[in-house]
Length: 87
Image (cartoon, rainbow, N blue to C red; front, side, top):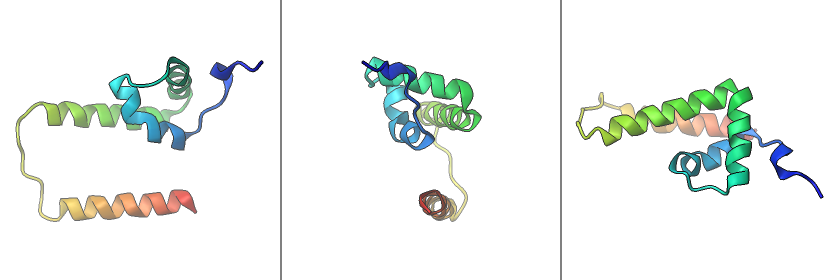
């Protein structure tokens, strides 16, 4: 029988499960695999930290105005990035 905790998890799987990780809504084995991934992947750790920071800002309750066009630029950048990752 194979030990699932030692199975590698890739960055894309981490990104798909990131919100579940933050909310504590994961099977303990997957949570452990993600924690191991964060220990060796600076990029995913930065994404985790950034996501946590955004959540803290949003939960703060203080509203702020985004610069004109920000949402469109953000959506375009995310679309461009996901297309590049899938190629």
